[in-house]
Image 1 (cartoon, one colour):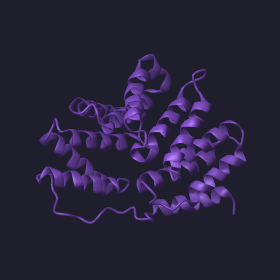
Image 2 (image 1 turned 90 degrees about the vertical axis):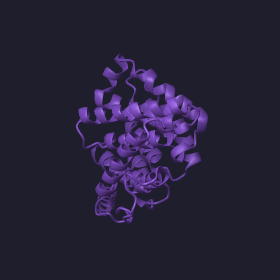
Image 3 (image 1 turned 45 degrees about the vertical axis):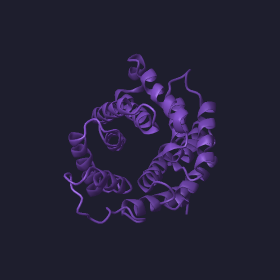
Image 4 (image 1 turned 135 degrees about the vertical axis):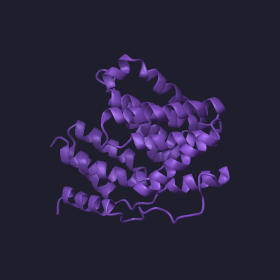
Length: 260
């Protein structure tokens, strides 16, 4: 059995919900419940956000919480996190991803205004700006000055807590260096970021995915396939199940369409 066959099998299992992708048990928490209970429920649903019902409930609760407490930091960064996940769906049209990213960006900016000294607001601002820029296209985003707007909150998040979100901040830096057009693209800086991410969280599958992308770009197909096999074999649940399942699907697509 070749690697693509293995990855297809993993993708089918993931899409079928194997590994705990279903929504958490219903609770009596509603939008009118005390705010701490609502935030706890949002965090529970975040662990199942690739389930449509779970994500719909999370988004409803987040929107209602923003309406109730429009200046509350804990509410605002969680709402930005919700809209980033919505914007990060590769199946959506570019303009829709850009609109959702802008919503996340606006919420994160409000979070930063409420508390500029915590990592979450800056981190979700940077990711949402990335979605907004991706929807525009990299060249157009650069021409519109988005690069500086993206780097400022990411630099602040890095300074506040580089380990935040399971070591994802160095992965975001790596993605930035890989997405820049030549001659600004810098694979060496991307490699360094991915290694740092894996030092923080050895289970970080997206770091492995970007390593595979670099290997493909540099003509090292066997290395990329070995990284794909590592991603395929990794058990879901090490740190962030929805993200892990998404990366497994992206690895399948990368190796199916990448250069040979």
